[in-house]
Length: 138
Ligand code: CMP
Image (cartoon, rainbow, N blue to C red; front, side):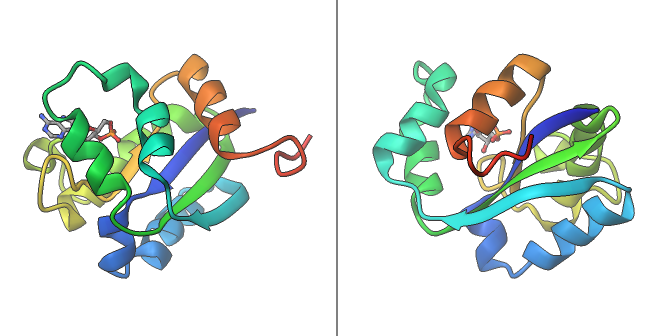
């Protein structure tokens, strides 16, 4: 059984699609095993996206990620990393497949509604970045 980190970004919260995103996960048979709403500080956003720190969009991305509350979730299921990425669609909503979260709700390459871990190693790092040992089910 695999786990991954999912974030509903500030634009997703502002667009009132928290319920719709969760509905799509649950409809796909994905289990939500932890969840919370938080408002990141700039430092916390920079730490989360540290792998992108040399990218030209790093400052804008971390500003955006601190512009409002986000919803962080741990998703669980067989092959959930890939399944979540399929439900989200491509990073750039213009390239996302029909029926994906980003195709349906994103308006911008940066403001793309959701984030999902891309591999088991990043999932482990990202889950531990957002949740402490008491919040992560055994
Ligand atoms: P995410 O899947 O959270 O991973 C990194 C984020 O950086 C990405 O979603 C987008 O929000 C943002 N991003 C990626 N590429 C670009 C880009 N070319 N310009 C602006 N933001 C980007």
